[in-house]
Image 1 (cartoon, rainbow, N blue to C red):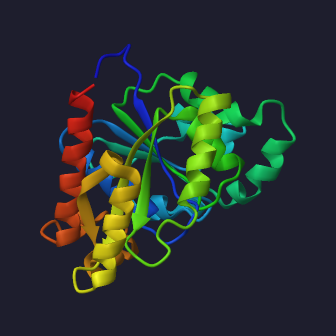
Image 2 (cartoon, rainbow, N blue to C red):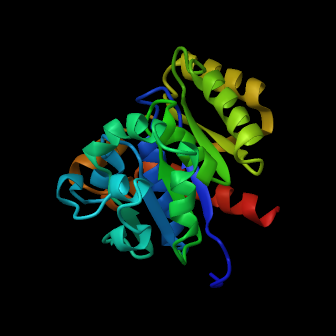
Length: 261
C-alpha cells in the first residue's frame, strides 16, 4: 500500500454473544492476508479469543490493547506478527473488562482508540477490530475509529435479537462522532442446511437488510469450532473445509466491494 494511504478500519461487532464474531474477524483477516493484503487485528474483547485464535497467549503479551487504549503504549510498539504472512495482532488484556468504567471518567472517552490509530504510522491495508459482545465504551470507541462495520448474524432463532440495538448505536455514533461510519455488510453465520429454520432466518435477514447481506453464508462446521483450540484460523487448520472455503468467498466479496467504490 502507499505510505500516505490510510488503512481501512473495520469493526466486527454484534452485542449478542456466540454468533461467530471473533471467528469472522480472524478468518476474514487471514483470508485477506493470504492475497497479500497487510492486515492488523485489534483484539478489543477482554476474553481475548481473537488473540488465542491467532496462536498467541494474551496473558503473556508484554504490551496489549488496554495499554494502547489508555495511552500507555503506542499502538505500533504493541503489534505482534503472527505466523501468518502479512497478518499481525495487538493482543487483548483482561484489564479491558474495566475499561468502560475507566474511560467514562475521562474527557471525550469515545475518541481514545481513534486517536491511538491516527497518531501511529500504520502501513496496513485493513485493520479489523474484534469488539466485545456488548455495547459499551469499548464498542463505541471501535465504531468511532472505524470506517465501516461488519455484523455477523447467526442463522438461529432470535437471530435479529440485539441487532436493532446495534444498528441504533451505529446511527448514534454516525450522527454524533463519526459521520463517515458505514454498515459494510451483514454476514450470515452458523447456517445449517439440514434445518428449515436456517433457511427461514436467512431469508428474514435478507428481507430486513437487503443488499447489505453478503451472498456468502458461513456454514455450521465442526472444523471451524475446533480451529481456535489449536491456535489457528480455519484457513490454516483445515483449508479444504467448508468453513475455510466460505471465508475465502467472503473475502472475495469484501474485496469486490472496494473495487466498486
